[in-house]
Image (tube, rainbow, N blue to C red):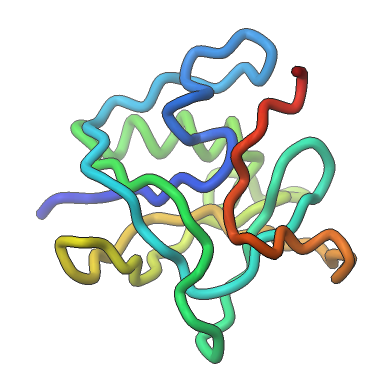
Length: 134
C-alpha cells in the first residue's frame, strides 16, 4: 500500500536540500496540492498545524507519494523532532490524516504541533510560503 506525506512548512519542495533550513530531500514524488482540516500557526520561524475536524480543510500544502516510507519517515521524524521516533520532549507528532486533493481524499502522514500556540500567530490565509532567512 502506498504511503503519502502532507508537507505544509519546511518539508515543502521549495525547501528540500536548503542549507539554511537543513531540510532533507524527500525520497518521493510530488503528486499535487492538498488541504488539511485544521489551523496553521507561526510557531517561530517555522509553522505548526493543529487538527480540528470542525473546520473546513483550509491549510494548503503539498502531497508526496513516498518511495521508501519507512526510511524516509525515520529521517523526517528526526528532522521534525517528532513522535514516534522522539519520545523525550517532541515538538511534533506524525499522524495519519485525511487530506483533500484533486484526486479525492488521501490519507497522509502529517506532522502536528504538540505545544500550546498563541492564537494571534495563526496564518489566516492557510499557507506558509515565505523563506525565513530571506
